[in-house]
Image (cartoon, rainbow, N blue to C red; front, side):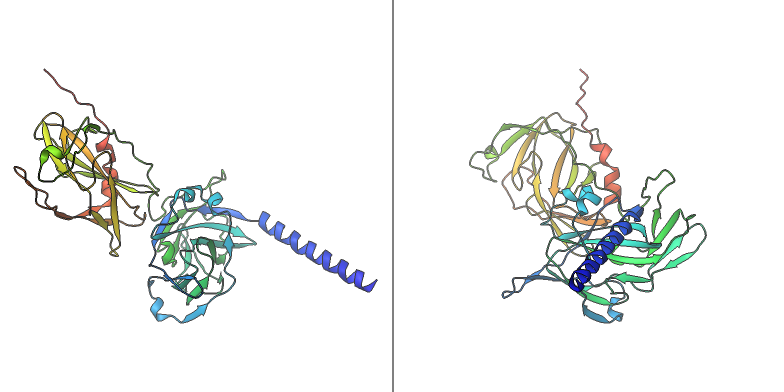
Length: 388
């Protein structure tokens, strides 16, 4: 009977614990949520030959060289439904050289919790950083500052390492005091790996709908639609020194006249589309694009050109039209993280070839991504208009 009573008490205790967990989950209230997707450049991983485990050493974060390295932390929470929370993550390829980092702000058990989600780029991540005394939430209306109380796992103010399974999503939690019910506009500081250095955030409205004023970077573009050029004749035994072997195209993606050298850019999770405005000075003109072109970001990471939409990549070709036509040549690069503001376009010089006026010169050109995204309307298809 004693054994049975002990067993019964254990079952009741377990039931109470489960009930508490359920109740706790019901108390979670979403205050704000990241609408965009940040992309953190990921260092190359190394693989241990014995354990087969992959490891990355994270980039240095602001000031962490001044803090103690506490080694490995345990019990890092994970989430299984990250794509339910952020459906756009389903479109982010998992084999790219960056890791998605997203977040949401909640109210749980009379405290404010900042959930910082991070997809594991390897089985082991070293030299990581979450937050320290600089981590606060500012009520922009009153100036009240809510300071961080603790973190889950316990890694506050220290450099640390953690283990998991590559591809899983961990949930670092930063706990603050409960925000006053009157708080509406806030700024979050001190979480550099999530680009929170004074990020402005609007909390849930009275209607119960959350929205985000600024997420450190704009949301992704949808994949742009371009008119596909018509292949008149294919390349035959291509020889760069024999123009008769080059492919011939017409019916290009025409646009309204723009200044020479105009570009526009579209950033999607799958690729970066860089549209270049070209002018027809003749009814038949040769072009060459692609190949070893690349974009280089501020950290030196390179994004290769994968293809040229509708045209050959790294081959000379003819385009036919009418003198005065303006059309788009669209370069498709590997996807750029949204937080990047500027890149450098590097176009290597092409090999010399036998042709009158032959020119395949290279270029190194800085590009401002925000400005180029604003140029997208310039590349809408515009049918040719000829007055006779």
